[in-house]
Amino acid sequence: MALPLGETIAERVQLVLSKIRSTAVKAGRSPGSVRLVAATKTVAVDRLWEGINAGLSILGENRVQEAVPKITALNQATVRWHFIGQLQRRKVRSIIGLFDLIHSVDSLELAQEIDRRAGEAGLCQDILLEVNIGREPTKAGFYSDDLVQVVSTMPRFSHIRIKGLMAIPPLTAEVELVRPYFQKLRELAGQVTALHLPSVMMDELSMGMSNDYEVAIEEGATLVRVGTAIFGARYA
Ligand SMILES: *Cc1c(COP(=O)(O)O)cnc(C)c1O
Image (cartoon, rainbow, N blue to C red; front, side, top):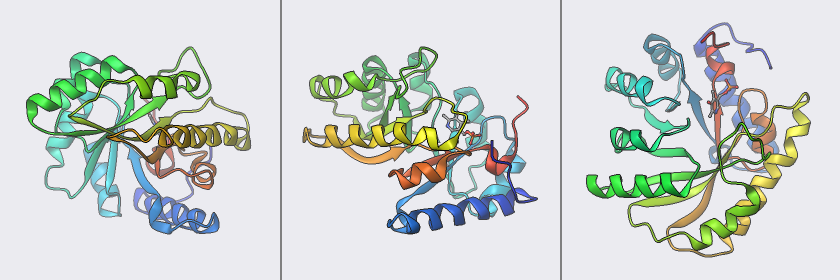
């Protein structure tokens, strides 16, 4: 794990934001083409304020019961929320309307439930499909071999919009070893785009965390989810 270099949360936010921009530019991309989602699990509200004041504009939460009080406590902040953790179907109803984007849709049943609940609430929920890119039994997500088939035979949802793909690749000893997984996710997005399905866009690739977000940006990430490099190591 790359150690955060800055002393304070504010310094680390600035550091990560500038690294995101410089990595994008070096890769021939526009500096605004990659957005930072700060992963905030276990991080208390006062430290989130510090991050927001330093320039964080999207916070990503993993757990419904942790997210809801934080969203309430930070309702004066100009910050958007994304849901990035595993989502149980029975919790969908309580989060509809709170998150701009749900990164972690890992089954058709979950997509169906989000569509149903978003419909009841009269809104349209943006989602990403999570891909188990390393075929790890401990991880959630669609297998890449199945994804094109799943997406092309999916029912037409009227209250969700599929905006792209998300993946958490296997932990590797060296950061370079993770690059092929990011490449694979980008290729998959290309295959889905080629299907030209209505309400399925592949504009977003959510990939890259504290120790590999630069590689992910080189491989096309549009959303990087970074926790430790901003808030320090988690003890929970
Ligand atoms: C915690 C978490 C992250 C951030 O991980 P770090 O290594 O702390 O940057 C990213 N994505 C998800 C889904 C997470 O749960």
